[in-house]
Amino acid sequence: MLADVPFRFVHSYELSTIPLYILLGAVAHKSGITTDVFRSMRVLLGRMPGGLAVACIFGCGGFSALSGSSLACAAAMGRISIPEMIDNGYDRRLAAGTVAMGGTVGSMIPPSIPFLLFAILAEVSVGQLLLAGILPGLLTLLGYVITVQIWVRLRPEAAPGRAVRVSGRDMLGAILGLWPATLLFAIIAVGIFTGLFTTIQSAAVSVIAATLIGIARGALRLSDMYEALEEAVSQSAQLFIMAFGAKVLITLVAASNLTSGLIGWTQHAGLEPWQIMAAIIVLFLILGMFLDPSGILLLMVPITLPIVSDLGYDLIWYAVIVVKLLEIGLVTPPMGLNAFMVNASVPRSHAVDLREVFAGIAPFLVLEAVVTGLLLGFPIISLLIPGMM
Image 1: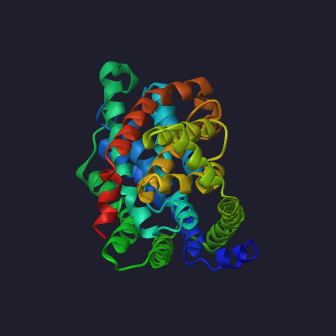
Image 2 (image 1 turned 180 degrees about the vertical axis):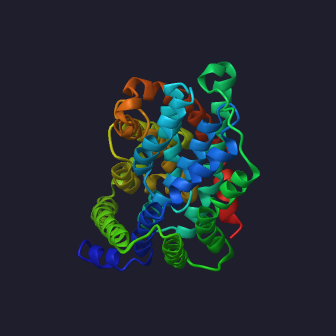
Image 3 (image 1 turned 90 degrees about the vertical axis):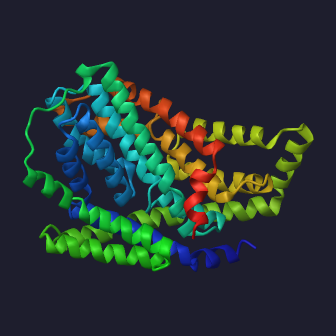
């Protein structure tokens, strides 16, 4: 049985989407497409109270979605946006918190590497999983914006409005600056939803589009393309090795009847399905405090998937819950990888203490609890768009 795992894993059709989407993120970053989202939103929203923080949230969401890495987003946006917010009188906690939290949304909005890994492990539709994250991702972004506005209303001095006048020409330039990222998102989401592209085709076309945009803007050189390819190969190899180990674990778990034993134990104990799900959620949250999200995903999904499936829960919905919990783990102390990355990336002239970063994250964690509750209580939020395919 185990002898067949390497062959079946390597010949997985969906597996080829991972290096393509990682390459897309690298090319988009090298071309400046990811940072353009923040610069454009800064112009469009910068004058309103808390506008720079809101612009940072949208910028981080676009950056991490295209790059596929919330840590890369935290590093890049920490260098770019936090000094600007501090120079404009923003509270350091608010500035750091928005960057740390904004980058987590990229795990939910397509293209999403965690969803791709989950689809390969669970053998569910990649396209449906990618589309399932759109509404939860937008709901999370909206919640972050509301959190910033509540913060600013309660403490106006935390985010003063800017008195800088913005000309119509600047506004038009900002709107036009959003088109590359919008185009790439449309190729993936709209292409998959309408059936115009398969998941792999949408990945390939978006890589070609990002490359052409970078060349046309004069921002993408041959050396940049080489670095992007090198980055895609390196990250893909790491993920493939971990995913292969997870597939072996799935096979061993199935052969050992471990999950059957666990299911039998829960039935004997008289536990309700919601109680078992609550225990799984708590376990994910605890692991998220100490481990890398990819490691948690590849370790826990093989064990919990049969249990969740046997309980009758939809696996697409479960994938959204898992990715949401992984997002929360990125900013939860004591590890909080995004928080440490923000702390390390900010220039010394605008240094932000790690305690200030976690203090800035705290209000957003309250929002995350609300959003997670909505996703648990109303599965239609996750299943609406996939159900329309």
